[in-house]
Length: 289
Image 1 (cartoon, one colour):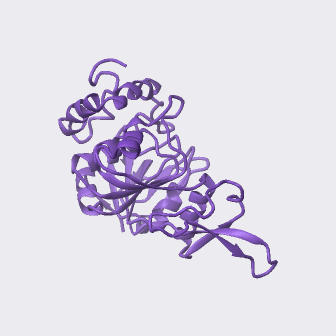
Image 2: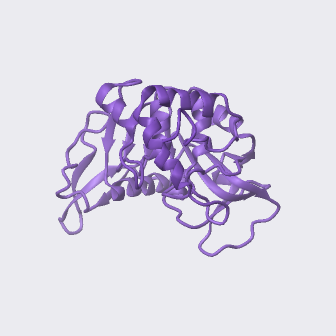
Image 3: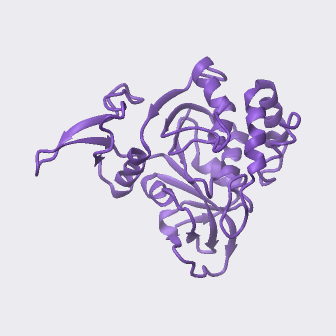
């Protein structure tokens, strides 16, 4: 059953050095507050997992939290490159970063397999992508051919994802720890169900979850920790609670290009900030973009 705790306590209990950590949220409900708390607690040697690593993982990689990344597509949405990510790959700063790349479909199906308790997922979509046969983090092919036992068709298989920890953001939880989220829901549910432990940050904790169209409810018994974190997805957005901060993404490009400006941003907006001080003033850190 879920425990309602502070965000600092949730990260301290659930996220350990060397863990495989999936922080999911597709455009919407990206768990930025939780990511900053991981940085603040100086976690190291993490294997980060995410369908679309964006600014959140740029921050974690630049802060030295990660040694490996399993992903599909990486960039600052609508702006350009992730410069801390690129610096790690190209120059091993602040340390080397091993990569395992998949398609969006491959990643989504890997989560589904993990959530379903089966060892792999099967799909057609890898044919012709150039990802077939590429080595994964273990040095073995991460995408492998498989023959359908019923039709003889040649398909591809990808291993299930079973992170040590899944972290998501949601709109609400009740006092029993049941979690409710709606809007663009991505693979948050599958990430939580595939993981050994889970943290859910929420905009608010309420007495009762009111019905919402298309809402997903994760029952308390599949969640480990719930932490109230208002505005915890900023600069992304939480439908019904906040709007996307487009200026933040624009400002991040200049900050992340320069190691010193990034280090100043960390000092001012993560290590010197209160745990729930919002996303940090990207436009102000180290000078205007």
